[in-house]
Length: 476
Image (tube, rainbow, N blue to C red; front, side, top):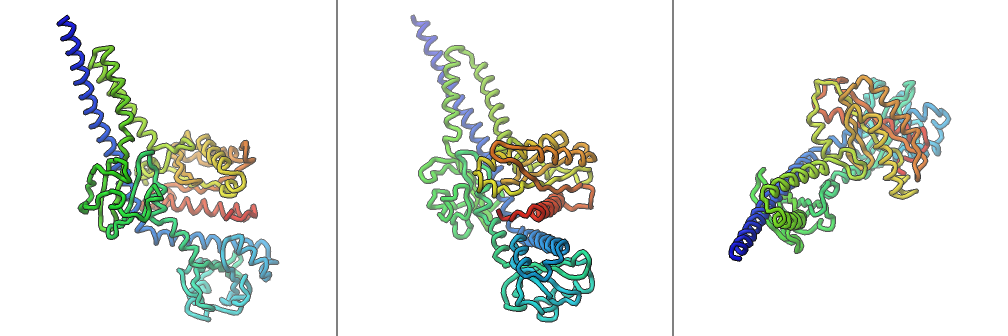
């Protein structure tokens, strides 16, 4: 009896010690993994914010490129339909189609002879300081120009103008847009928008506050925007530096592990609810306890835990790099992979974007939009997956990086065009995808992102041609 009691006591002691050891191991591993995941997110947010602060000029440049494309598109339309050259109503329709506010047609002397705004007829490059900006067009017909936001000559109205010569070199075509359009584009880069689009797991949140006011300017939970860190329960007594600080906090009454970093502009915090990993820990401890009672073997328990942790890490890695809807690689994987590319080697960057997705969502519902996005991904994987990697980097924006057999690009794109053209869904009958391709050996690039930007421009040119040819309002 005594031996049985001793054995029972020893068994209980072994189980208790094993469970305590398991609890300690789980806490250490979970805290370590939570810190690593939080630090990755934290570093990513800081990097995006730094780039965001420096990207306004790049954004304006890309907008100028887009407006020049619109001016060229209007020029092509007028060349194709000469009868609209002096038809104000038709030019106004074209302006609406191309999402511009004004169209002006200049003769070879720099005088406005026609357009969508008759009251400007007769103005010339000599009429004022603003319009004289375009005088170099008179001496070089290969030029295309786009002006920064400037008060126009006629009314002092804030406008942004782009101009180009037509194909025959007989007239100049200018488009004008109100600065509100530029502000709308810049608004997409606001911290609230940037942070809300950050991918996080359930139970994790990202907060970005102004370093001076300590008010939340961006958060993955939009309801928290405008509140102060102190009100939320996030500490602000953090020293500036690159090394993050770890604190146990209570955010609106919910216990969280918080990783915080502060610089001269922002305070960035990533929180993980304790329940994010505590539930799994409790279940694991219970299973281990049962296993120890039945098997009385600590070594088997340790082996099972090692395998479990390996699985969890692999699952976490897969989830952090995979788009949930389509199953292709996500923005996080894209940013990691693109920075590893060698500009001295040959590879192809393809920028892709679905056409009329907003119209499909508005007409048939988001289930139809998801059907199109998944179908587009399937076509990309079927055509390019064997030769590279497919990424979903936005709602309907994709990128493909072809690193194998780039000389067979034509065959790949033909197969892709055929796949897209032959697709028919259960909700939507058809789809079209605009894309632009750029080779790493086309130019002497300074950075891989320059290749991505050029591919984007080519894709947008393709998209503009699609909307012109199809007659669809691109805003729908």
